[in-house]
Amino acid sequence: MKQKWNLQDIKPPQTKKRRRASLHESSEHDNSLEGDSEVQKIKLTDGRKKSRMGYVWATLIFILVLGGGIFISYISSGAEVVVHPRNNNSTVNAEFTAFIKGESATDLHYEIMSLDASGEKQVRATGQEEVTEQARGQILIYNRHTTEPIRLVTNTRFESENGLVFRISDPAIVPGYVRGEDGEIVPGVTQADVFADQPGNEYNLAPTTFTIPGFSGSPEFNNVTAESVDSMKGGFDGIQVVVEESELQTAQQALRTELRNSLIERLENEKPAGYVMLTGAQVFVYESLPTVEMGSDLATIKEKTTLQIPIFNKEDFASFLAYQLVPGYQGEPVRLNEATTDLTFEYASSTVAISDLKPLNSIDFKLVGRAHLVWTFDESDFLSDLQGSPETALQSIREKYKAIERVSAVIRPFWRSAFPTDIDRIKIIESLD
Image (cartoon, rainbow, N blue to C red; front, side, top):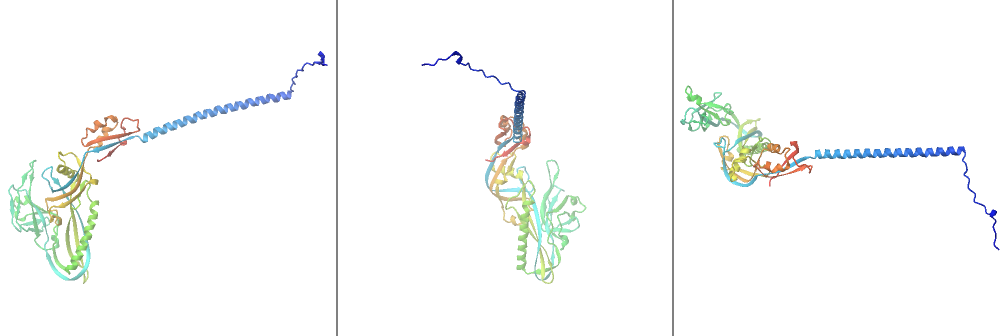
């Protein structure tokens, strides 16, 4: 049987009554809500601050990167210009003549560089002897008196400034003077060997001037004069110790070798700037000074060695070689590239190599090797033309300089299209093909 339900047996669901919170609980709840709100505000503020700091740091990093880039761009900015000048590398094997005073612009001129050194050695003496020697040397005689030659006989006297008399060994003919282009008198000149009128050390004179006593009181006295080419040497009058010949020669040779080597060491350091010296051109002049007694059985021998070498002005020498070696050369400025030039000098006459160069007016010599000639240009003018110019103007600028065959340039940074306005930031690099 089915169960029957009465209406009153069905209870409606009861609605849950909301419990009213106490005042204390309500207060705590409100405080909790206010605390959460404050935390949220703090978090929001911190987030905004972090966001602002991020922007600040990003801005600072951007400025630093930009400034660093500009700075690096500045310090690395500049231009390198590679210049290929005209050059000629030729083999040389020929004889030439150089003049102490050239007559034309195409003559090769030279000067004489001299170095000297003295030394002494002790040797065993074997005795003493009386020595009487007259000083000797060479003079240049000038004729400013007449256009006609003047003849001087053997033993013609020449008096030095301090009154010492020398005589010429042979007759001499002094050419007459000529007039230069400016009308000035160019005296005739000849060279003569002379010897002292008397023996003695006092006649060993340094270079000086002379007059001819025989012309005293006439116009020739002041217009026919002379000057010594070098010092007068060899004068002596007194006692000298005697040394055995073989021992003397051995000691002299050893001393001369020492002096010679010391002069060669000095040569490169004392070469005048702007001049060329060639291998093999040295000449050594030896002079034996009077021997001095050192006790009863020792003597001191003294030697003086003089190194002479012809030197050539660098520009003149390079131009002279260009005339000789380069067809069509017309006197443009050139230089000798010493790093790639290897020339050997040899006197045409073997006797010259052991004699004194000073009396000579010219020298004949042979050059063998390679000469590397480089055409030159005014680098300061070239830099001025490049300064601030657009890169596209480089080739037109080059055309102004005939010595430059080819040219190229690299400008930094790569986006720049003009050469720096600061001339110090333009570097020229020479390239010799």
